[in-house]
Image 1 (cartoon, rainbow, N blue to C red):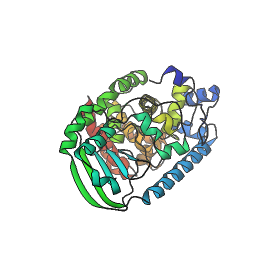
Image 2 (image 1 turned 120 degrees about the vertical axis):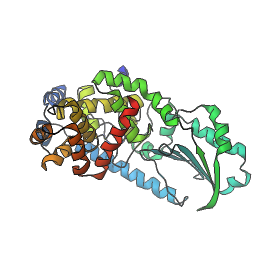
Image 3 (image 1 turned 90 degrees about the horizontal axis):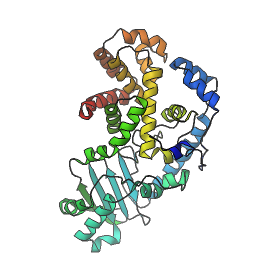
Image 4 (image 1 turned 180 degrees about the vertical axis):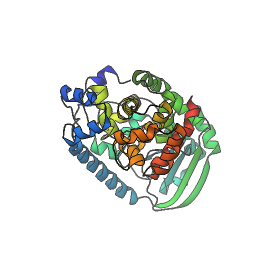
Length: 376
């Protein structure tokens, strides 16, 4: 749940590219009154809710900062790695150490190049691993040049660690780490690969359970569904991001999910930015609120709860309009409802697995539905 001080306006502080958009409460109320997806689309077309310009500026700045940083890295490293939804990558200021937190492979990869290799010892290996395990979310955010360039310094983020790991793990991880040497762009390169304990993913998941349950209760959404979506979207990486851009544990897109959820949570439409969406509690609440909107507004006409949940999962990834398009060739939910309601949930699942336009969306519903039983 978003804390009271956040509700009072944590999104209204200024950022370098665009300020958070706050429409009048009258317009916000009008949006909530439009329970039908097609009516909602019409209201957007009429220009009642317009964050397109602001989001376009933000996206442009984000893409430029991303490209600039990529270019800077390429001057020092043959393999340019940047953070994405399931990895977080950090380069030190001298550009001779790279740390990759790989949440999907459940490992940390630390690359050291140049002069440091001559005196690198087992104690150095343990020290580098400990730094990774001990890195907090707030510090990780502050040292990320892409985010710093487009958002800038703000009050501290959550003091959570990026990984839920005990400091005592450093020594055994260092002892079992795989060390490889290869040629780098600036001389020899040492790569340290430390496999995290097998239960690391479940430990990370457990740290978010209280927030998930709170938001699930508030927005009447299944907690297991939230967990399965978080697992699929980010493998519980609180600094997850993509080029879209989408941010955080549930990969909230400011223009779509963030836009709809902010109107429900705050009573007004706002442009959520990465700085806000990397707060785990905020991200989880926005994701839960968006699932609530999909279930009770956009797709409420689907009568079978099991069928509706499958469509909600697909819509979370690709939008309700694309779910309708898989059945009718148009984005009209009204037109799709009679067809959807004639089919069983098993038939709905099979249809979406084969007819959704994008392969990512087709695979997405499979991943989420297969993960759901693990969180029941």
